[in-house]
Image (tube, rainbow, N blue to C red; front, side, top):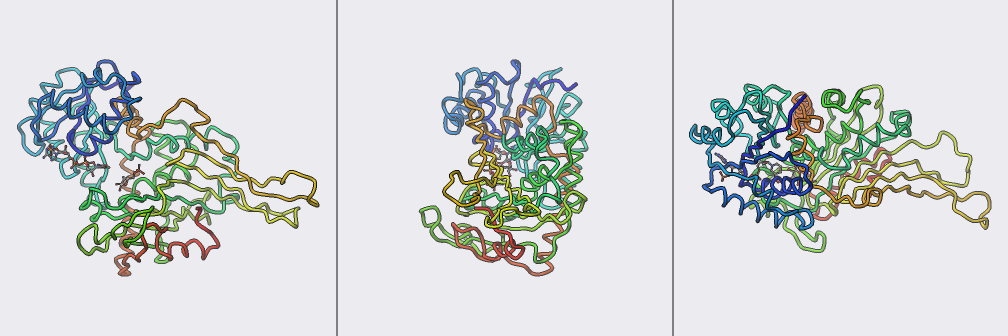
Length: 476
Ligand SMILES: NC(=O)C1=CN([C@@H]2O[C@H](COP(=O)(O)OP(=O)(O)OC[C@H]3O[C@@H](n4cnc5c(N)ncnc54)[C@H](OP(=O)(O)O)[C@@H]3O)[C@@H](O)[C@H]2O)C=CC1
Ligand SMILES: O=C1O[C@H](COP(=O)(O)O)[C@@H](O)[C@H](O)[C@H]1O
């Protein structure tokens, strides 16, 4: 049985992710008494800081990024914090860190630093005796830029930590509705008999963002939408929709099923992908610059991608999975739409029957809605008049009193508790890269460059055509 961590070491503690997500998440967990009582948190980075300066830094971050009703007293959380200055690329500093941690404590290590720093960090931790069986390690994305660089990172980590003690973050797995997707599929009898090619026509996954480049300019320009969003979050969503029922909700069983789906992804043909890059214009009521202007130079990086994917197994033969994601789209929305087939024979000749559709809204609204055909009430119409109506389950209504959590709250709690179920295993990451690398190789071979789209639109018209030539409309 895994024991709870007693010390959390946070590398990159002064960084953006730590300020916006990690420290606020930990404070929210503390406010709800969800952290182990004895948990100490040691922040580390190159900047010089005393413990008390780090606590002030954390307080400011929490006041900015965590709603006041979720902060609790804050003092008990701030008292857990210490700081250890350390440049991970030099050997000095690790001994002091080890001394701060002390002997005989279970340790969780979170690397919120650039992956290029993982290798020296792991070497330093090993030499200081902080990578032994009492430690587990958590890695932030991006885990590489392709399969080979991902293997290099994974090898470096595996030199000191066995897979059972490696926790790879995909923050989408920490989102409440993503976990609810697992509950919806495997805690209800209703859907499973229909969850296959016989009854499902196609699936759509959309992750729309209204923001542009934001602050991580160089990172984004080196990555693009395919590697930034599809390689990780969207493929994890697809795997959860498409996987076979696991035998239990444990890390091994769930991840075994996801990896089978990822390995069954068929390589795309040329016409099954569309890339785009936004041009300036009116977007959500403001005039925004185009991608090149924001970047300050010309670039061929795609800020939008739409794909038609296929899973080559019995369950999903002939069922396309349409996926699209992009920056500067009209809405911030993440949703999965499962489109069922039409009834085999209509007994209502005058009615235009629409196929049932399950819409799983992940953000901004967490809701699940099933569209059904129903009779329009009344006797004034001759025969039956039918109309499509939604059956809605809005999460805040169904579970009143529950607030929206930061996805990292769940993941940090599971890291501290040693539960890997919502973390990504090495074979999954590598299967994901394998598929993405083949798409990029295809783009390179064809000399494909992104088509332009106006900021505030749903991507280039070719993305609409990708679905429409199959008689499918993107869900709006
Ligand atoms: N920010 C975000 O929203 C997201 C970030 N990520 C990923 O998480 C990681 C961290 O991102 P982010 O916080 O934005 O990055 P930042 O650049 O804001 O922070 C980097 C952190 O690393 C520390 N650092 C840099 N060099 C060293 C070094 N040689 N030794 C010790 N510490 C060092 C910095 O502290 P100091 O300068 O004091 O040394 C700082 O605390 C990146 O890999 C990023 O891609 C992933 C998803 C979202
Ligand atoms: O990993 C990333 O995700 C964010 C979107 O996350 P969300 O939780 O707000 O949907 C994206 O903006 C960023 O480019 C990417 O690196």
